[in-house]
Image (cartoon, rainbow, N blue to C red; front, side, top):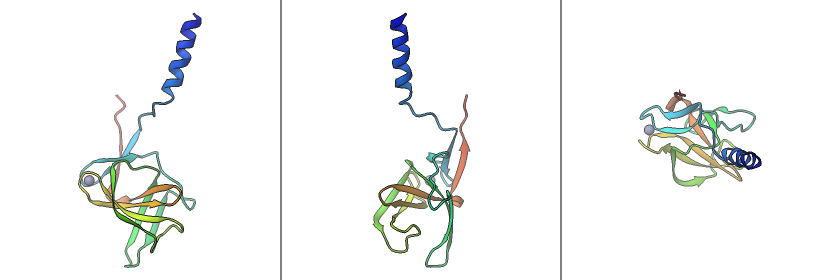
Length: 127
Ligand SMILES: [Zn+2]
């Protein structure tokens, strides 16, 4: 009986290492490639949704995520015209269809800003 309790304890500890399956995911609106866990939003400047105007006058409305494993990044990181002081930015594209989806912002930490018009949140089937 003591052995069974020990085994149960080991299993419980092991299971904590398995990340829970996301309830919803963020996908590319063009090709449905999975980009991120919808719950993995990242708060920066007190918000997870942001609206900025770039130097060309284009309004960008995006949501910030801690990770976006389905994205690829392009080129070098720029300091110029950053919306988050201290952060460099890189173009982030869909890892499948390469559509421009937003930016990766890097400093000591990093996060993705994904354009709301280019992404769709999908609930995963639990069955
Ligand atoms: Zn895509």
